[in-house]
Length: 135
Image (cartoon, rainbow, N blue to C red; front, side, top):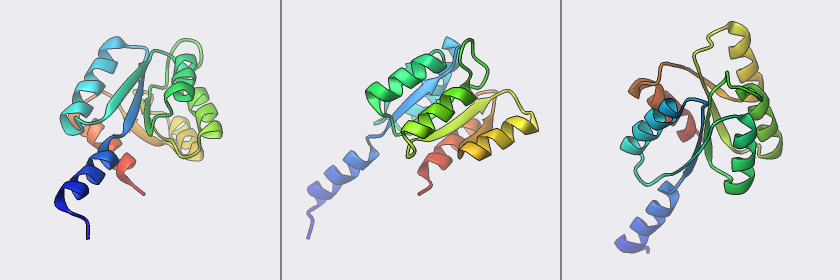
């Protein structure tokens, strides 16, 4: 039988997830970080400002989860997500975007990404966290 201390320790290890926030807006990254940490204070968070940085961060830190902006200079979020999914298929990615076109939703679905629309709000972050919590 596992003692209470051992059980709590195992639970804490399971809760220590990593999140990569990818957005070209520093303000958006700060907002996402604050809202996630309110709900998941034990998570470790990394940031990237564009698709290329995101791919490098994923290689370096292998996060459990990613929030990915769609429209960024250089490599956009869909192209970056596609590369990440190919190399790290178990990483859960939420496309967090103001682009609400049906073609964008379809592309996200084809790649196995969740599609959550901006603006960044508590409800929007809750949607992302609900996706991450799915088995």
